[in-house]
Amino acid sequence: MGVFQMPSLGADMEAGKLVEWLVKPGDAVHRGDIVAVVETQKGAIEVEIFEEGVVGSLEAELGSTLPVGAPMATILAEGEAPPAEPADMATEVARPTPVSAPPVAAKVPEPVNAPQPAVIGLPASPAARRLAADRGIDLSGISGSGPGGAITFRDVEGAPSEVAAPARAAPADAMAEMRKAIAAAMQRSKREIPHFQLSQTVDVQKTTDWLSARNATAAPAERILLGALFMKAAALAASKVSEMNGHYGADGFAPAPQVNLGVAVALRGGGLIAPAIPDADTLPLPDLMAAMKDLVARARAMRLRSSELTNGTITVSSLGEKGAETMTGIIFPPQVALLAIGAPRLRPWIVTDGDGAPAQIEPRQVVTFTLSADHRVSDGRQANRFLAEVDALLQAPETL
Image (cartoon, rainbow, N blue to C red; front, side, top):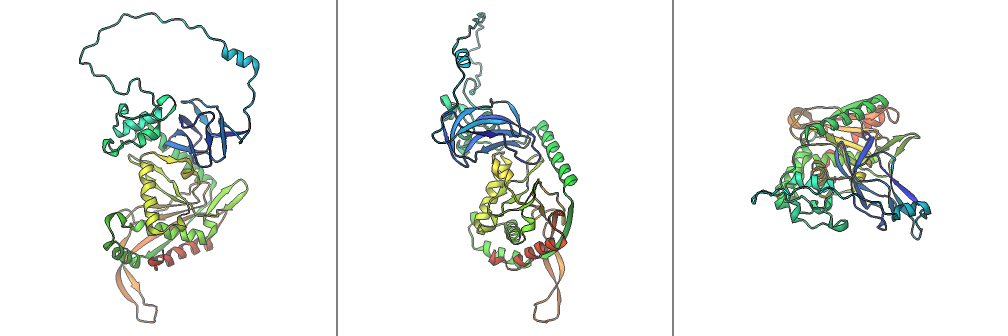
């Protein structure tokens, strides 16, 4: 019998509030199944399970706040019987408890035209109610798939988009808690990780020219943003410079066998979160672009999965095409590197053709890349090699 515990959903998490169970005792579960919804300072997160078996019991009650590592459920192996319940406990449970009848109150007549809230009396999880409120969805029009017909988070999530209103910004108190969590995580990062930074300004004129030509013949839904090429170059560079890709833990540095690229996403109303795209270095550009759009949309709607917050191996933070020219970032532990990308700028640039022709000064689009790295794992030589890889990849955008 295994015990499913409250997972750590990021370096800034100490506890989470259980707001929805998506399984019940007797349900079969498989690796990657979503079994619960947990609320943290950064919103409601869908929690996955990473073992096979059958749910034996649910050990945590809805609404309870559980520290990381607290037991949430027991998972039985195939063919394993649940532990026998002690006889005295079974007797106690079976014994009916007398309940006093409440006093009968005088019935107060209601106005005939009094408005009645449509959701009163409807069984629905707290996460489902919150999502419905954020999207402006009437719960009375949704069929519940949970126990006893209860409406779940997924039922609301699958409601027709035409009845959904845009998500509202998080309330001020929730945003304050998020800022506290971010501050605590970044304080820990700066205190425990010996950061060093290297910057390199890269001529990206070939990249922007290639992208403009490609997008000119593509349908609007198939166009790619410049940021997708930067992300792909970063992922490929991380796959070649292993010292930038992995986790640092109690046993030191463990390089990752794949590149799970964290994408820093600015949330509506403030705050930041960095979910990861798995195997980003192997994705074709259109697939990487689609994954980025999906991740950003779900991050801002607070509909991320736990693995997306914990599996990142290196993070990229970009200011987009309109922002500051240069920035530096703080590493997300337990990762060991973060690449910060400034906004493109048109600058006079010395250009050579590589064949000995006289150098010329031309207006070129350039971008400054700043790598923050962990000095326990790497030094300037590896960091410089990483930035050189990014530069070389962007000089041949058709190969990305």
